[in-house]
Length: 141
Length: 207
Image (tube, rainbow over all chains, first blue to last red; front, side, top):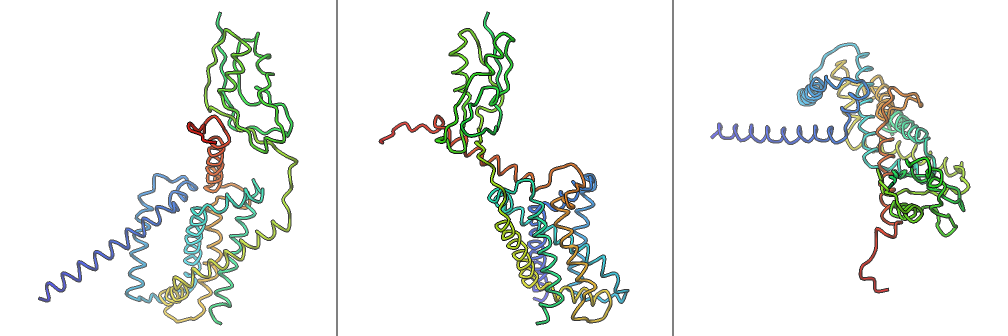
């Protein structure tokens, strides 16, 4: 009986992992963040390595969130972690904005062709401001 | 001898209101030297205030015009089947208050959006957890992680749109420019069908 129970639990765990994992990569693919990065850096050939980076990163995240490890290393490791994590989220947010197709319409409405950069900068600074405001002030009130 | 005239309609041209639109404005033409200048200066359309701001010239109209004037010629068309004439009225500048309004709309809008997102995905507890994983200590304000994260957030967006304050990383168009182009293409397609009376003829019109 226990064997069957274990098998069922194993199966359900595997199935849910499969669903979440495939959803995660599907999301990344739709937003096109990885192609964008390879296009910027002209490293199309390394695309498989990038796939592995995403998979290994996700696995590390799973491990970190399920097992609560503690590494006891210098807190300055947090700076590169924060920057890279932030850039990734920033790209996700930018891609989402772009998918929603808001900016082309807005730019056309206010006849600002050729100066979308100003509107993008509004969004970029807004994001940075919002994030810093949240961490410095908002969450503690 | 029968002469062959090749024409290729331009996609989009701009014209002043009340301007006489000539054939050379709306199309590229290859024709024997003898008739070329004559063809080039044919008037295709006289813009009137009634035309509003968009006029579509169909290639059929152009062929009709040419074959009416020159009897023994063959017209070959290449490329798009119509030209969109955009009437440019006196160009209105961007109104500054309106622009500022939108700028701050976007600024505070995205600030709000990112805060909601962080709250929604419990970003705070994740940050605290990462801090604990790395250092082994607990801190309710892991700013060492959060400030670089916040700046990185902006950097990532700039990277995605490939605009480092107008300086390009490389020459490829940014996704937003492609998106703008697609949007313009969709608009043009709409205009081509809807402003061109010939392409939307009703067969059983009761009116």
